[in-house]
Length: 213
Image (cartoon, rainbow, N blue to C red; front, side, top):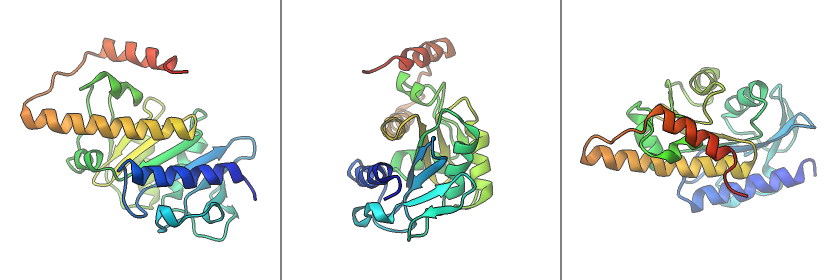
């Protein structure tokens, strides 16, 4: 099976999205790039994550053409492709419909530096302008908001998009920023949160480059 390991990881992390409460049913999508082959594995469209098998995961090239797979790829194929084509550092993407991130996105708010963990995205988590799901406009809006400066963006009235140098990295960022969205929501419910200064966030970005094992 072509890119069997990547396909299995898409299946595993799809289930983990549900287990972590980052989406429901078949919402959201996941992809993993194999840079050497110039191909990426992406979750199929509209199938419950607990029913997806590795053979259901679709293999696509950077032109958006299906190379292997019997299923229709995620409707957000273009959203994944634009980052793989334009950012050398991105090797995996996780798109969720997690509750708190989607709540903040539905207000069309960014998540400021309410906590140092926001640095998993950058100095903040931007919010991309709204566009219909599955469209070229949505992909372009997400890329415009994220650029090369941020690794996570909210999608207005839609959800969250996280970029990583591995599927573990992208998933962790999606998980952490959902927590940050909840923290921001709760602090706004009580009062006005104190925002960390830019210099501190720059320091956090540097520290996170060598964080972990």
